[in-house]
Image (spheres, rainbow, N blue to C red):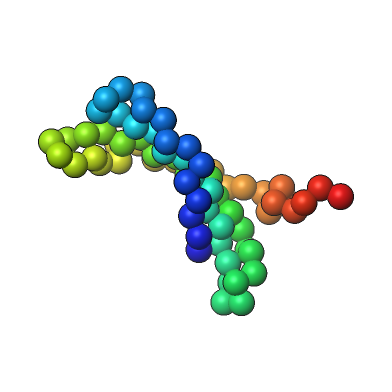
Length: 67
């Protein structure tokens, strides 16, 4: 699996939104599916913790280059 960060948006100084493209692959590194998770992070002391998360599947046909 690979992850590519697509967005990091500061909502407030203590709240950040991240969006990632994740690509699932088989043992031959061929794509088998994808996802588009988003997380809202909140600062708690010196750490940030995920407070909301959503993983939306992406239709693999959308990953094919347009012909």
